[in-house]
Length: 113
Image 1 (cartoon, rainbow, N blue to C red):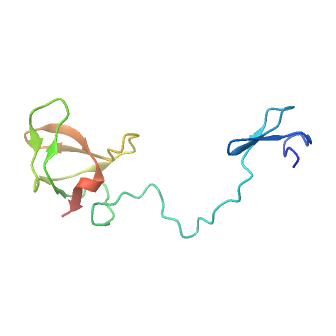
Image 2 (cartoon, rainbow, N blue to C red):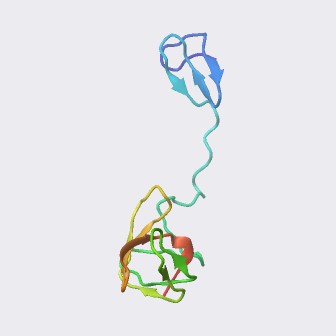
Image 3 (cartoon, one colour):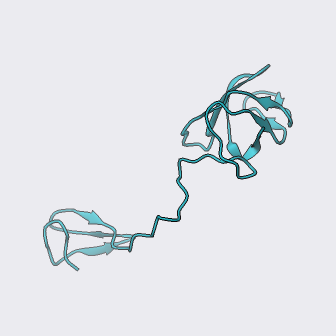
């Protein structure tokens, strides 16, 4: 194994990566998976597998407790005009719910209406 950056003959394996001690280049030698049939990670799907888009109307499937509040969003609540967001915590729907205000939901707890 040679370093693809500097050609050094002394790289070592560190976890999932190869590391060159001379130039500090790191690379993954694992073969790249074929992504032709892989699903696009930016596609947001509801609990039934339907693709969601900005402006859709969804229905909440079960009672959802609101963090920091004693209230809960009841199952069957319709939420209109959703926006898809890329939040790191898994909440990928931004919306306004009547009586609650602006909040984020996880797509696994809603179905497209």
